[in-house]
Length: 537
Image (cartoon, rainbow, N blue to C red; front, side, top):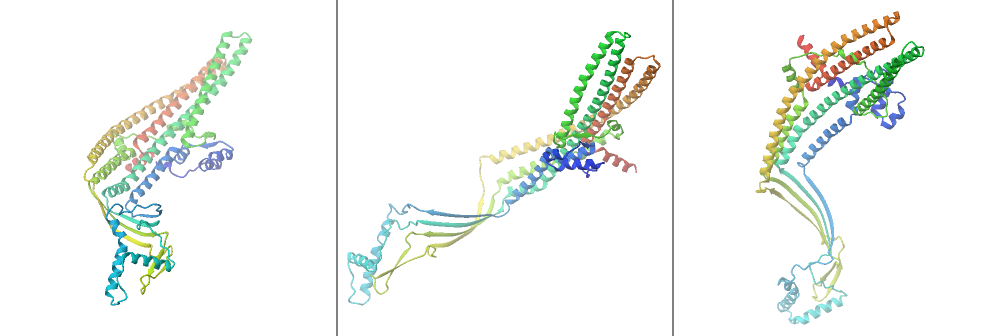
């Protein structure tokens, strides 16, 4: 994989410009800036896909999401600080003592003042001050208020406060919560390598897909080119036969047969051309390139026969796959994550402990802020003053702190059942891992057989191309000597073309099989070659 993550090293200045447009410009700007087709090799296509492919970009965003979720989990270990503020206008307040004997207590407070006045009159030693009846006391008190110019507002509910303000700061700190501790620690340890393994496997599968479609596109392009040449030759043959029929040298059915052959070849050319466009569109989708951009694939498919392949024992190949495959590592980590979640559920059996502190600033402000004061020398002389809205008589601080313990003692066996469900999930994950072991072995064996079969067919078809080329040379020589017909030469040419296509198909199958082999092992072939060279030294 590392060999595909190196910086792109294009071979021409035009490619540098075109690749820059494709990689970094928005599709609309790239379409206007690009004035020539973009030429791309296989390695460059892989590198572009690893950068631009939308599914890979989504996978990397999922990794960023996981990191954010881990941080979110740890946030529960920090203090929770809340600031609140409210204002309440009490339009109508219920008397808390209505309907009880306590209400009479407050209505008799005036009588207490009368009794205190008479007691002072009896004990002050002044013969001029004598106790007075209760009616006279209240009359004199009311007259004193009138003489002082004070008007008293009578409130039937002495507990009503029209304006109430409250601003509070609440701080809560978890001291012990096993669920948060297990969850945050497990997420930090296992989620990052889980997402990294997932992305690595997606990149390996993407590389395999890019190679397959790249090779497939090159193959159908070769077929289209061969088909175009066949059409040109068939057209020339038809023209020659038409001329000979007109001269009476050949019968008319040969001209008709040539016309049928030409029509069939032209139809096949349309089909193959459409296959080229469809394959190219699929490649653009993988690379994240705008469908309107024009690209040209560089690279001779026939050179694929030079791709090295080192056969190794099947057990060694399986061992490499079991060590290198990210999806196998991902399943192992998934089992660990499930165990962490099991611990989190078991933690519900434990209590959680928190500390809290609340600080508040409270205002109870009446609409009537008049304060009446009695004269020290004359009990029936009064003065009045009005307090400010923000007087300290109405505004006060309050503070409290403590600990809070929560411990669920019974929840209807919900925790027990969820523990059982998580254990089943772990068992299923372990079975999936065992199945993947078997599947990896099968994939490695199949890919090795496919490579070996493709090698044999490639060698056989290469000899067949030599034979077809030799046969074409013989027929061409005989035609020049006048002992062969143009139809024989065209047939020999078609045999040569078909032999070359069969050879290219075998090469295609070979390089695709090697790509599947690398994907099955979870490691590029070049790394295996380097490892083998090191072992030899």
